[in-house]
Image (cartoon, rainbow, N blue to C red; front, side, top):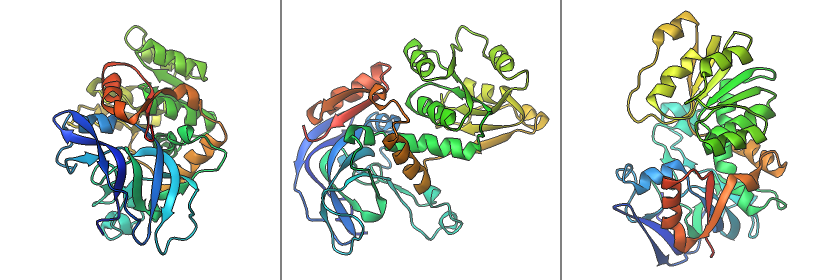
Length: 347
């Protein structure tokens, strides 16, 4: 892969290790063959970016490096050999670059390639004014879609993949454990599929958000979640449980709330092994499903959902800050209950 495949340029918010981000200036390079240079408009901060800042992923990041993978922008220049994309097109990027040769790729599961390059982690990311990426990663965004809203496509694609992986059907009951940004998006996509959704979330503001947008909400710290799930499902349990909280106790609880032959989707990343009630899995013939990132169809569906106004994008965007305030924006997410903070990369 050529060194110009993921070239950065202009001002960039760069992770330099030790919990620090510095804004630096890089030269703007012409795009190499098969790539496009994007004038980045907005970059979102996600949980993975927080893990990078805290040093948990230093083995994968080439320090110093611009990070970020939730983004939107406009094509600024097109390299030789690129077709179907043009200067001025509004776009986002599906930040997965696979090898095409490993057993997973050959089986058609390129998004979980055994040698996957997650762009923005293994390679330079979108927290910079100009970002060059392979044209194959670029996903067009309709001209009428706000670029701020388009920066939500990547996390929405995660939710679309999670719901598709669950095989959730119209009329089924879904329990979402954890009402952070991804949990809220899963709830919204699940309702779009015609499901009845319960969101279990201890934070009052996040419960209020979910309730405003059609979910039945439960405070798991003070309410009897098991009894409520039984009541809401006529004693059966949830058809699908999405574990999004990433806590050992919620992983254990997830199988307890699923109906006979229900599906439990493990969405959150558990960095260490956690207990799970395998007797319950056996007794009820449950399915435990992993769900990691997304496929191209999930990304394209996410673009459609944003374009249709199917998600409350303005409410999901808690704040927008200039590039110079990137470190402060990270700290606000660490210490508060914000939904989605966007970096206005050009300001």
